[in-house]
Amino acid sequence: MTRSAVGRFRRTVSPLTGAICCVSLVMGLAPATAGASGLAGVGAGGVVQTSDQKQREVEAILDELDRLEEQMDALAEDYADALNDGIELEKEIAATEDRIKAKEIELAAMQAQLQNVALKTFVGKSISNSLASILSSTGSLSDAVRRSYLTSVALNTGVSGLDELQGVIEDIARERKKLESQRTRAGGIADYAKKRLAAAEASANVYTARQAQALRDLGDLLRGEQSRRAKAALEEAARMAAEFTKTKYSNIPAPSSAAGTAVKAALSQLGVTYKFGALSPGVAFDCSGLMVYAWSKAGVGIPRSSRSQYYALTRIPTGAAQPGDLIFSRSPVSHVGMYLGNGQMIASPRTGDVVKVYAVSWWKVTGVGRPK
Image (cartoon, rainbow, N blue to C red; front, side, top):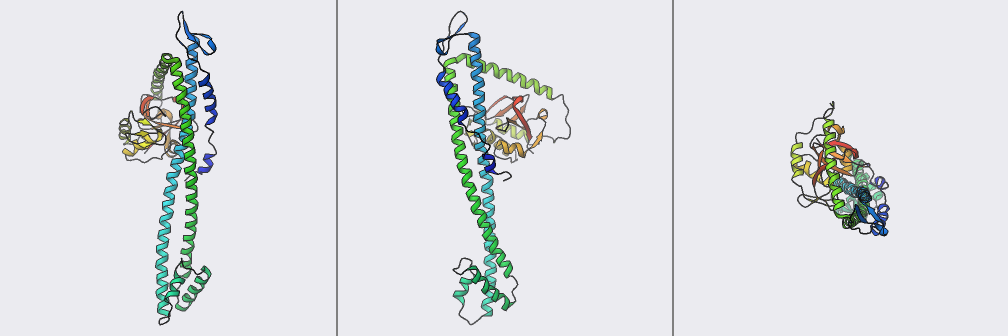
């Protein structure tokens, strides 16, 4: 692992900070009904609100939902990051176990060689049982006694590999200690991932409750403002994308020839449900899981979480983004999508949503990465 999982874990923020404020807002929002003569209805505390006041309330709620979504994304990314750390550590554990097995095979061969030498040297003597105990690294004799005997054999037979044998024994001991430490760390990462998942799910529940309450209270006004914002975002994203094409960039890598395949793979998952930590084609994805899947279909492997993807991929100027490039958002990075061109991207946004195409919020973009 290139970074300490524990060090990164200390950077996380409690998910309860926004949740408490949000619950208070949910409880304090009173239903409103449509009125006549330019009045939008009655607000909290029986105060009559004008259409402008109602519109400002809708905008404030949508801004609040955006903040809650950002918090939820950060928690979800902590979880995905922990999953990625766990995957990488499992690879390290497997490699350590392989080294131990190889060293044990090497040790067994060296012990067998010494046993043969000893038998030839002391032929005719009844030493088979004690010799097996002496030569076995798992025998009941202490290392000091075992080494003393082996030294005697080596001196009497001219064998020069005793230090090498002892070195192998020490290597195995070191690798076993390392394996124990790795397994302890893996357990800690698993516990952390479990806690981050619980926090992300709690945050998602708060978001869902707030959104449902707002829809009950404001209904068509809320949907209308969401639609207006989405349309405006598409227009602005397309305008900025057109502006980007006027700038010529040099010394940046060309897009991968497999980018088209990755784009098609991502588009094939339109409508698939979002789920924390998911990477299940046709079933569920989180934002980074969709990117891993799409690029794997193009024969390119990328890390599991959006933060690890951000640090691993070749960074290019935002204005140079091409279809297939990954668009990273927020700081620290907590969301990723795939650029499609014309200011649009495909992503798996959040709980309660599905894989879809929508406008790039260029002002939220932290960076652009190009898989190769």
